[in-house]
Length: 246
Image (cartoon, rainbow, N blue to C red; front, side):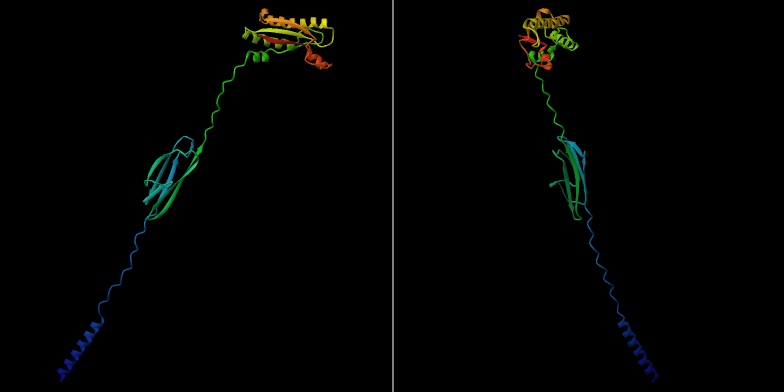
């Protein structure tokens, strides 16, 4: 009887053990989280110009470098990712580099300032002066005090200048015309005008001008340059006038 009870108890224990074992089955391991795909590296780009300032007609060198780019353009023209090229802009220009790749788009710019050199002023050859023009500039009328044929200091300076220029033009021959104001008789003024013309001739010959190159004539009061009856007008008429003879 006891053996039967022990057997039943053993069978029950085994059944219980099997039940426990079957309820503790092997658990599945947890599913690992999804690994994100690697992010593309960012695109970088640089652009420089050397020199940055030029004169029109000169050149500059553009240089650029990019990283992680597979499409690079310089001012719309496709170029290598890294490189350089010469440029000769005719006006100030900003160059633009665009680099594209999986990691995005990057731009870079470089400014080149162009200055315009000043236009040289053409050197014109002056037209040589004619003998008449030179004579008019160098040999000027001289003036006298009232009722006098004495040369003033101003007249002496003008005659010295005239003699110097006449020495540079040995072919010149000159007529000296003596003149007076309206006061006094015709005969008296003709004599006074001749004395004034002779005074100029003597000064020129003493300065080295040959006398045979000089002629004198007196017009007295017959050729006034001013006709008003006042001292300013009379002063203008008391003069020696010089004429270049051809």
